[in-house]
Length: 353
Ligand code: QUE
Image (tube, rainbow, N blue to C red; front, top):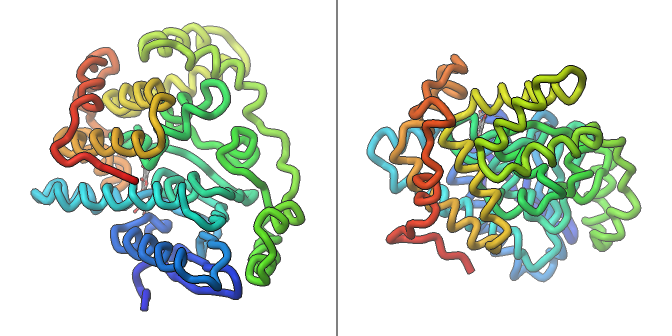
């Protein structure tokens, strides 16, 4: 059975339950977890007693901190880039399978939810947030880019919030994430056992959620949305930086916010920030499979560059928080070279059906 691989499966009455349980890595998804989840989900499609499927974490602190990027760095450094690509291929295929899962799929998300954690929850039909959700797509901080279908989801958020989240890796709480539509419901975690009981008893998901959901507090972001839209609607990374500089020059809440965003952007990998910007420009033109294929081109090519290795080293391995990016400045990145990373097909494209 599935012991010691960081993930558990059980059927309770009418509900198939997947529990992420790899606490030492904040439930970061490794290849074995991805494979096991995909295989179990495929079996539950055929299992008539399973009416719906639920994904949750065994731990309060984190739903899932992302993908197993430390191991990907080890693989890439030791000449095993194909093994790293296999991981991302399988992870993106799982995200896509969850998006079109034929039974009601419900993700219960509380605590940290970064990157790969969003991949397995953000495409679910029902996305339930708890009060302590901390959502971010922080990959630009490690020389990667917001993947797992962020190219599809983020540009479809209201206004330019998705471009802001992608380029800065900003972290938002439950009220903001629900207000933006990243999550469909707020159900206080104290009610999660009752929710699971109702699903086990065979109650339809829609009805259980209608009974147990609560009103989320007012989103803190509301006041800043007009500013985010004004700044991040810029037509180039240069234009966005100029708008940030302009807004940062004043005083008050808006200027403080603009300064914080500018500082965050300047700490991130310049290459990653340009990639994130162009992802947001392109995402509306593609379906989820097309977006994931584009991300697979990007991740393949980033395995040949320096920033992903340096970012994971500085943020997750040595934890000195001082990555040396190459190139080191945003104005040294050629947007046409970034576009080419996405435009050039691979000999082995990611094809999802
Ligand atoms: C950006 C990321 C990740 C991150 C931090 C970032 C990410 C990821 C982890 C992570 C955290 C704790 C662990 C672990 C991985 O952190 O994708 O194994 O124990 O998985 O700024 O994209």
